[in-house]
Length: 304
Image 1 (cartoon, rainbow, N blue to C red):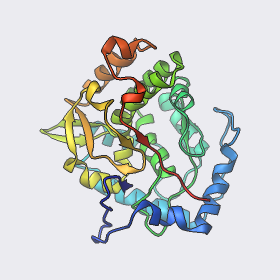
Image 2 (image 1 turned 90 degrees about the vertical axis):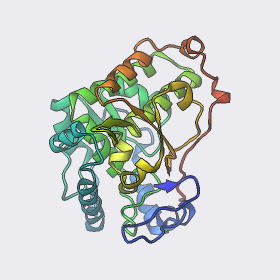
Image 3 (image 1 turned 30 degrees about the horizontal axis):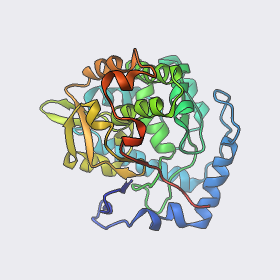
Image 4 (image 1 turned 45 degrees about the vertical axis):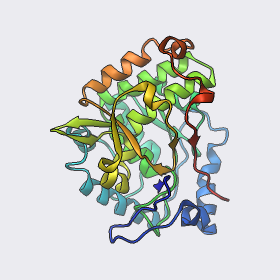
């Protein structure tokens, strides 16, 4: 992931990896053709219908194996114990890029969730709301092989490895549904943005205190080698909704600010307290700023 504050990440040997604009995932024409070919079927895809089968190349399988191994070796000591246990149960293979249906068929008996096809960043109403139905949008393309531990946008490793860990656990799956039910009840961009920001700082970039130190539980942290190594250097603040909704955040970058819940079990209380009665009037009831006064959100954009 790109460091949105302008500092470029390091690879395991300490070499700086460049900016997003320089990343081969955004500049390599052959890679972009492959990525765009895997994105194309998402246009008009009906959520819940099977994802098309992808004939992954050996290079793509090798990239998956490289990243999967690096992440599993890096997670112990940095990731909440309950998440590590969920990862052991998750039906996510280590030796090949899995098909959506391959993982979904094994996830569904565990938590009721399935992956549904996405072509990239999905609008909030569709992305969040479909979680109420047990559907999680996921892409099928693999990050560029030249720098497998550094990706400027979410890919199949983030979606299937990161979120697949959560969705193998019924407790986490119910939290995704809680987000989905709240999003399904509202329609305004303002209300959906509030839900999206709470989702972002919990199920994507969430941190919890455990054994006297912050540990990661969010899927974006679980699936990022760089974030796992540096998230404790971020500004880790106590959970505070008025604080977090005012912050800018960057989908393509290391997060300079994270919010920690006191313990992982308290995450359920945090989300249910905010989302169970969420409606179009929640912003005003809580005295939160309107959408126009909140920090901006920047999204990645691939060429091609």
